[in-house]
Length: 222
Image 1 (cartoon, rainbow, N blue to C red):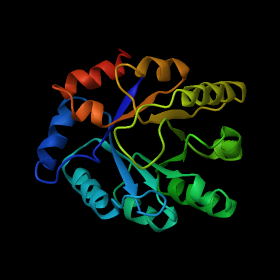
Image 2 (image 1 turned 45 degrees about the horizontal axis):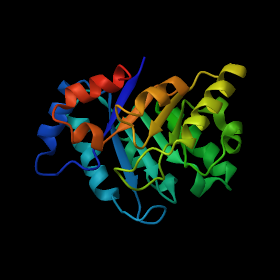
Image 3 (image 1 turned 90 degrees about the vertical axis):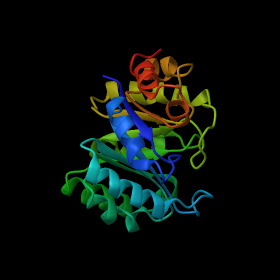
């Protein structure tokens, strides 16, 4: 089953509650929370995203899908655990040289009933995260470089999704593959056929004439 996680990054604060209602009725599966610290990526959305996530946790029955694009993810985890996210994913690159930190975060999240994800940028090889795969639930393959919305999907990242799916099958691993960046009606078929089953989309959905139709097209791979 294909699920859609709609990024709320570009929603305005003024109409936020109404927009969340519209997206819920349009049948998004998750609200994607793009947490940036102004260090790992240029923008700093940390305060606004925590405010948005807190609001969503109070007004919606749908889960939040948190993506930490930050240098020190361990400093953000507790705030989001308190909001009971469905998925919390941390970017691998800032912590890749600290195996114990990675294992501690995975353990902390799992102990609190949160599904754990590791995100990798286009330049990171899947071999770098293989040792952690038995302990997590989701791999988020960035199909653009983390930090900026509205980018076009990088075609080479589709091959990374294929390789990851093949590795899961060969090693009897039951993980979700999430993709984030440039997902729209023109690219969705390729990423789904490659093995992705959770699709993050922001501008394609939010800029559409009808977000329900846009979400439906993604779920039906059109």
